[in-house]
Amino acid sequence: MATIDLGGGIPAAELRDDKPLAGSFGGDDIILVRHGGKVCAFAGKCTHQGAPLETGMVIDGTVRCPWHHARFSLEDGEALSAPAFTPLDMFTVVEADGVVTVTVTGKAEGPRPAPSAPSIGRVVIVGGGAAGHACADMLARSGLGDDVTILSDDADAPYDRTTVSKDYLADDAEREDTALLQPGLGRGPAPKVLAGVAVASIDVGSRAVVTADQDRVPYDVLVLATGATPITPDTVKSAENVFVLRTLSDADALKAAAKDAERAIVLGASFIGLEAAASLTQAGLAVTVIARDSVPLAKVAGPEVGKFVQALHEEKGVTFHLDRNLTRFDGHTATLDDGTTIEGDLLVVGVGVEPRIDLAREAGLTIADNDAGGGVVVDAQLRTSVAGIYAIGDIANYPDPRLGHPVRVEHWVHAQRQGQWLARSLLGAVTGGYGDTPFFWTGQYATSLHYVGHVAKPDHRRIEGNVAEGDFAVFLTEDGKEQAVMTCGDHDEIALEKEAAWDAK
Image (cartoon, rainbow, N blue to C red; front, side):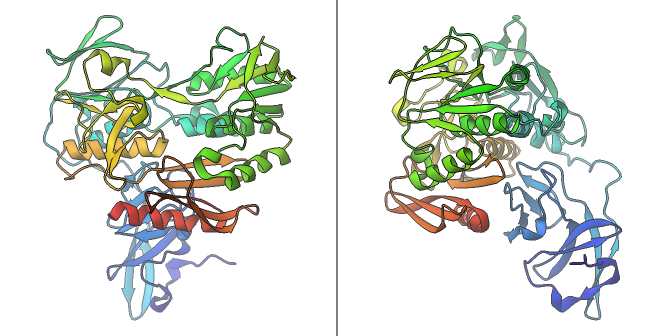
């Protein structure tokens, strides 16, 4: 179907309230939206990964990306919620005599000016992952970049971990494609980002962090965003050709090994394990997955979804050994608890992660018990038990207002949104407590699964659609209330709707 030239005008009657309409202007894809009696026009693709926004949803004064749920303001196109950071270009619209016409391009010639926010003092962020980068970005976008320092023990500047485990590992993206945008988007001074700098301790009394090189970095506000580290079972810790997949350097090492390999073994049927299996399969390796689970992902979304995902992999040639433990790996041969042996040129461990809380524990911060999710205990404002210190991302055990109890969530976008919310809270731009609904997505070959909400177990669930055909919604219940949903295919709109409804509570 031909694209509508919005420069030539369209009948105003064709534009329905809060329903994006796709078109073009000057060769650019754009969308028109009528909202609150006003017509606005924006670039038509999400600035995160190019999703078509005409298939997104208009909710609470924002247009929301259909793929990864980024949110853009209908006032000015600003990227309000991760995973997008770059705003949408705006276009000038005229409505007259029953015709709506786009008249002027909105392509920005430079970065938008930063607003002038009052200083909150020296902000030190420990960790350059999703949460730390997003917090620094939001502070810098408000004009406070000079006051912000990121200390990251990762050798690389902040990068997108979701791209690392998917496109980069599968050779569908270059290394430079994984980089996150400079915090602040060039609006005023940029934060100082110190990569390859490990923090050894926190001097709570003097309000300073001490690096491994014994440098002291003073702070007025300290944000701990130390993330998580992969769990490596004792059975493989000393073996050769064993890899984890967390950092960009982990992916570099795995990609280098995979170039000379023909067979790969993946230990664990977690999301990261299955994403690694998919990426290595797409890179041309024969892949075997070993897992203790009877069905992959059944503990997250139920056996129906797990069997569907398993079938996706088996169609691509992946072999599964389920209900099995790995008892030994000598660098070339895996031995299972039933005596089965599997040959492999490399083994990828994907059995989960644990929060990096040593720094917080040694500083005397309150730590949650493992049966309560572990991590650093924070209140609704993400404050730890020590004044001036906050915790966000994978380590934060925070009170979820919807569930009514504390949770610790290990999702990329959720960590980013925690970082953004904390920045706004520090600036006085939000009140109350943090309450964004957790969201993540996983890519399994050409299939994408969206998960919104949180439940401890998927024991109580209701299914709409056809799981086997990849078009479904699985509604998950905790304490008698629907608290999470996993969607696929044409049911993905339900995830967007649920996220908006639960955020509003």
